[in-house]
Image (tube, rainbow, N blue to C red; front, side, top):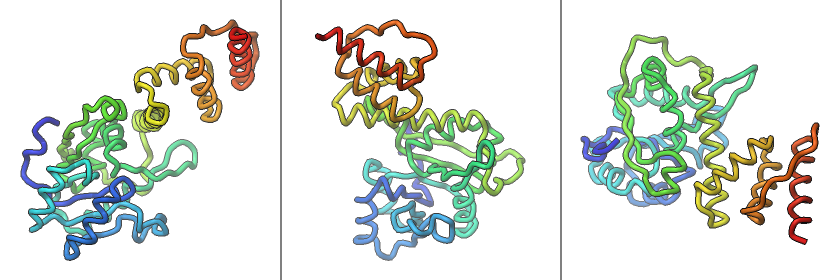
Length: 264
């Protein structure tokens, strides 16, 4: 949200450790006395807590708070405003980590990542936002979608807790259909971004290739990747007609033979 960086300094920083190694190094070297907690500590993810997210207390740390606002590309994570004690806040943030979906499926929700946050919280209505934010009054981060990142249009995002009277967040809270859909979109668009970065290809062009591949039934990741590599080698080639009852792999092989024959 425009202007969010001009708001009063946040009380907490939930630093996305895996995405902010330089910030972690500065924190350990230059801000030794700053109170911090590893978010994965005491959870099933504790074995990787050293490289996980870190909750940082910004109270009375004006220099560090200023860095978070003025250099968000280094200090990647979420800025939190909450009047709750650190233990209550930590408990809630740790409960947010594990979610369930479908039949007996569980997963780690990386909501502390600025890209993931841009998709996940967008899928929450006022009641769901009240439940997920819990003791957090306001949430800010610098980011956007993967397309925003690709075209350089990231900015400050801000959410305020509607504070509706709702049931507290459940243990392994079940995701709604809309939340699952947005998270799947996040993963797909991250994949597009990685391909566009690796191949030096325009993001929108790569997204078009992905959508064409999905329309052809290439939803399995290995088949989709093989399709992308093939399409990049034949960017203007027209698709052939397809015999009936082909599997996705057989359909891809059919396209490959057709284009290779067309070249010879």
